[in-house]
View 1: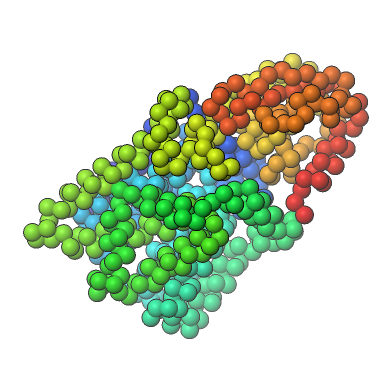
View 2 (view 1 turned 90 degrees about the vertical axis):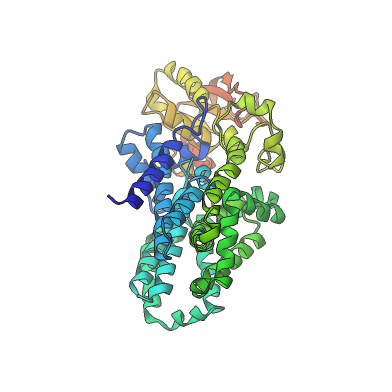
Length: 506
C-alpha cells in the first residue's frame, strides 16, 4: 500500500469515526430520518417528497437490523466517498501529497460533516454533484466519450435520489455554451448519454405521471411553507459559512481558472457555479441546496495552492492546513449537537449570531431547528406503547398521528413491531391500514391543535381520554397530546377514506 493510499485511508477512518461522536447522548434520530426508514418498508418508484433511491438504502438498513449504527453509517459512507472523489480529482489535476492532504482536510472538516450527520438524501446528492463534476473534468481533459456515458449514469441515479441534480445540469449547460467547450453539443455521444440518463429516470417519471406529479404539489407546499421565509441575501451569506475554514482554498480555485494557464480550459466549472447560484438565488432556495457545488473547487484550489506554495513559500503549506482546522473549530462548536439542549439554551448567543436559531417559520427559538427535531421521539413512543399495551384488541387498533415525524418515530422506537402508526401527512397517506375494521385509535395531536376536547371525535367513539403529552420542553413536538379513542360507533375506515381523499395531492 502506497503512502498516499495510507493517508487517504486515515482520512476515511477519521471521517467515519467523527459521525459517531458529533451527536451528544440524549438526542434521538431526526424527524426526516424516520420517514426515510419507513419508506424502506414500502418500496416504490417514487414518493411525495423524494425519488426512490433513499428507500433502497433504507431497505438495506432494515435487512441489517435497522439499528441506529447503520442509520449513521450510510450518510457517513456517502460522505467518505465524496472525499475519495475529491482526492481522485486532485490526482487528475496533477496534485501531489500536499494538495491531497489539504483537499482531504478541507472536505473532512467542513459543512459536509454536518450534511452527512443525518440520514437524508443530501449526502448522496452531494456525492452525485461531485461525481458529475468529476466526469466533466475527465471529459474536458481527455474528450473521451466514455465519460459522457458515465456522467449520464451519475445524473440518472442522482436524479433517483433527489431532483436537486437538475439545477447543477441547468448550470453546466449554459456554462459550456459560453466557453470554448461549446463544441460538446456537436458530439453525438452527448445525446446518446442523455438518452441513457432518460432511460434510468424513466420509471420515476412514469410513477410521477401515474400519481398526478406529486413533486409539483410538494414544491408548491415547500414554497408556501418554507421558501417564502428564505431571504436571498441570507442564502448568499450562508454560502460563505459552509466552507469557512477552507474559503481561501475556494478563492484560489476560482482565481486559478483565469490565472493558472493549465486550468483555463476548465472555466466552464466557474461559470456553472455562477449560473447555478443565480438560479437558486432567484428561486429563494435554501442555502444547503448548493453545497454540492463546492467539493470539486476544493480540488482545483488545493492543486493551485500547491503550485503557489513552493520554494520560499513552502512554509505556507503547514500554515494552510492549520488555518483550515482552526477556522473550522468555532463552527464545529455550534453546528453540531455536541452539547445538551439545556446547555445550548443557556448559552444561545453564538447560535443566534449565526442565525442558527431561526426556524422555517422565520422566528428564533431556543435550539436550532434540526436539534429540536431530534428530541421527544423516544418519549412519545414510550407513552404510545403504554397506551397500546392496555388495548387487548390490537388487530383493530391504529395509531393516527398529526405529522410524519410522530408516525415514523413511533414505528421506529415502539417495542411492538406490528404497530402501524400513520398520518395524513407525507407518504403515510398511502400506507393507512384499511384492510381490517378499525375499532380503536391512539391519536397524536400537535400542541397547536384547535380541538383539545376532541369534539370532532366524540360522536365517533364510546370512550375518549387524554393520557399524556410530550414533556420535553426543547422538542419541536413539545406539548403534542396523546389520546386513546375506544370502541368506534361508526365506520372509522370510511372516515379515514374520506380524510385520505381530502388530504391527498391532486
